[in-house]
Image 1: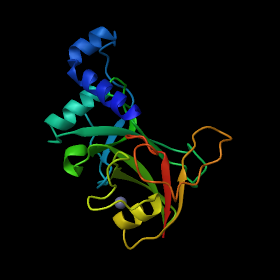
Image 2 (image 1 turned 90 degrees about the vertical axis):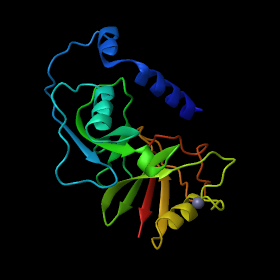
Image 3 (image 1 turned 45 degrees about the vertical axis):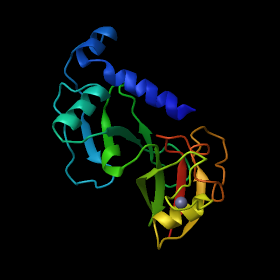
Amino acid sequence: MPTSVDQIQEEQAILLDEKEFITLFNLAPEIRTDPIEVYDMINPEPIPIIPPDYIQTCRALLNYLRGEKGLAKPDVWVRRMARHALTKDGISWKWVHPNKRVQGHLEFVDRAQCNFVDYIVVLKHQNDKDIPVPVGITEPDQPCCSQSDCGTVQKHLETLWAPCNIYVAKRIQYNEGEVPEDVLNRPFHTEQFASRHNDLCAYVS
Ligand SMILES: [Zn+2]
């Protein structure tokens, strides 16, 4: 499963000390020139966090968010514009591996605060806006909600976001020419949607 591979890779990466990592990957300790802005994905403030210039890698940023901002289990996502045709702006979010360099518009999710084990980012399209919503997701042998299983993406998101109606749910296709699959009646589980991915778009009224 991509979930466990991602987690193992991430944990191994986190174990590497920042200095060791820079030596290992032969990164020049230069000063960063690209601007970085970091927002809280769930409660975005108008003024972003601007990390100090020495922060170049996602690992360094995660350490900064833990040390300076008090986040227990942060994840970092990068926001990208015009990546698909499901909405006018076509915004998407990509989870950033700790080994990767960071730049541009970033958003964090604190898994501890959200009480997430596995989660995905759902692109919620409402009032003509693209809004990222991290949503916890379970494996197929566990119910999507603590008491019972809703059975479908539509019912699960309507339970979470009541009293909204979900009238479209499609799998986001990032390759040109691929037709987005209708997933309204699919079960909401990791078998359908890989953890730490943003491949579900829901139209909400
Ligand atoms: Zn549910």
